[in-house]
Image (cartoon, rainbow, N blue to C red):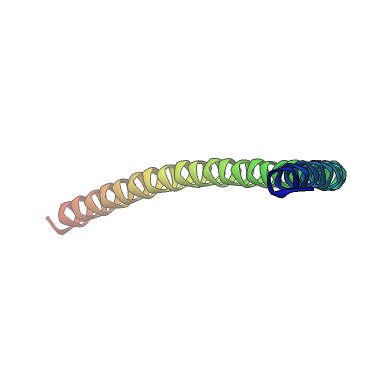
Length: 113
């Protein structure tokens, strides 16, 4: 084999070796990728399920917190109404007491005359 022929043979052999290497590497890469994809899908679905479960738990907790807040607001409104009624009753009692005192003062003044 002379120079140019040797170069052609080497180039052809190199090309075949590279193609075979790429094929083997590609096959191994494809197998590794398929394995990785299946692992990722499996773990991904578990991760997605875990994320969904966590989100559902968080949503449930937030709903409970919202209901507790609503209940507290209802309790506060009821207490506020009770305080308003108590204040009105206290004002009425104060007016009645002032009226009673005024009547007593008049009676004392009338008796003193």
